[in-house]
Image (cartoon, rainbow, N blue to C red; front, side, top):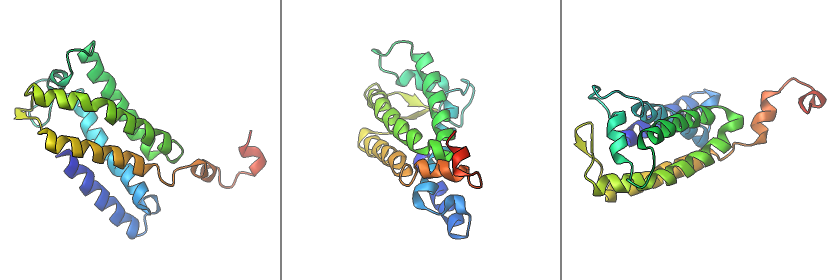
Length: 172
């Protein structure tokens, strides 16, 4: 479902870019916003109460945390906050590059939890987790999307935010 959200958002936003919405005029910019949409959805699960049935809950995600990781519940809340912050960082042009790199690192760090969840046969929202042959390529795709979103994001985006301000004032 998560991958489908990412792909539909990417194609929809890039379609808007083709229709003239400048914010989505490039594939990397559309990818940044699509990944942000996906992250808001996935981060929400980190805070979902146990009585939610349409998506994984906080308790489901805690069961994914390998036993060696301390404070599993706190780690789930922390990664949820990081996903929300990453989503915000992706939509702000001058933070997009840093957000993309940080999210790629976060996706790498979270991969062991996905591997553990498969080996421990964890259930998410009453369904078994994705098998590794599916989950690992999917995680690589998320890492690639985060890195792709950084393309074209640079200090130029920050300079564009100060359009109309004389160069001497924007340097203060």
